[in-house]
Image 1: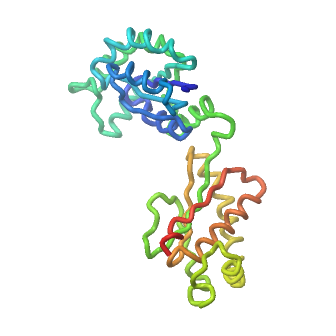
Image 2: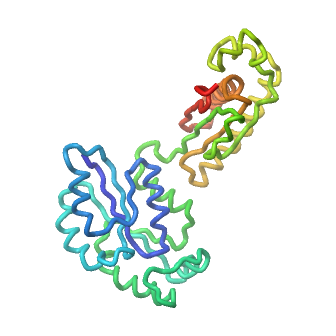
Image 3: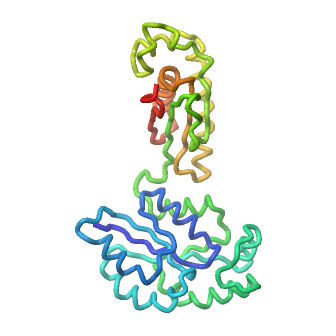
Length: 288
């Protein structure tokens, strides 16, 4: 059952892609540039008895040449079937839009030479849609982070505005994870691999954990890294990040990185003033 349907539209360069990404981070099913001719069929699909979609956000705008001519009729026919449907319209000043197109060097969809003329034409064509919108956001004074925060504040549920922290243990011999924002290397610690009794175990086993913890550098590393992350994580959250991935690597991703990822995550969870959801993934444990 669809509990929320948000149609995002507005002027080109006003931040629709940023808004859609923010909705996706809020666990909305996100669709960009859905043609108006497909909207009715799409609405039937997401509202059908077998649909698993509950929250939908989609961008519909003038990139579709049929949009302006057909949206009044299609919206009147479709939107009343959804209890919590709304139109979010993003606007911005001509000066800011012109600067954004200049900075990105993107072509305005209605421009055939002058960006200013394209903006003026688009603004006129979307006047009625702007009046129809249930929510209007002027992004003139916003950067991508402040727009994202605005979306989260308005459309996120309790706790959805908190950044999620994910620890990923891995083995350097398999490659560094591509999606990590921060990577730590714990190969300097004593390696259980060279202990015949521990070689076939992993960092989840108590005996391996005890061996690694017996290295005095392990505790010092956890303490120093915890303090560093206590400083750093809130600043990442303030920038509007939805996820922060922290990689911890050893040679094979089986012993040291697994234990240290768990240990560091536990320390952060217990830290006062650091209230973020924390998850742990052992990426290469099955490969070792």
